[in-house]
Amino acid sequence: MGIPQPYDDTANEHGRFLIALGEKTYHYISELKNVRETFKKYEVHLKGYDRPTTTYAATFNRLKDFLSKKLLSQENKNLVT
Image (cartoon, rainbow, N blue to C red; front, top):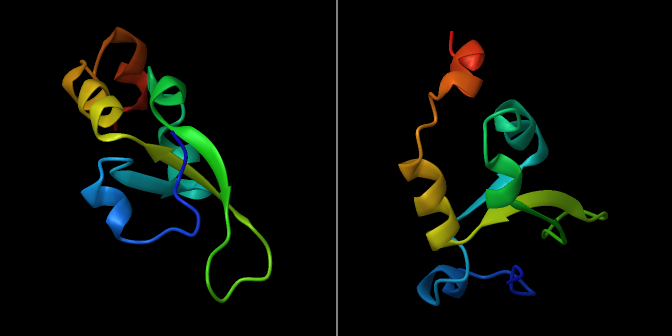
């Protein structure tokens, strides 16, 4: 599933995706377990920008699965401050 082109608010109504993260936010959580399987990378064209922007998006189901797992597992304890 990709981000609809052009992106509009109807994408959420059709269940295509719930959340899109920018590169900085994605980088911040990228060391958590299952992030790479949950969020897929897309290049999107945003109004007012000349160049495409890198975005990471997740579907409703993938986000639900990601959040329902133990994010504070042994592998992730070092990331919690």
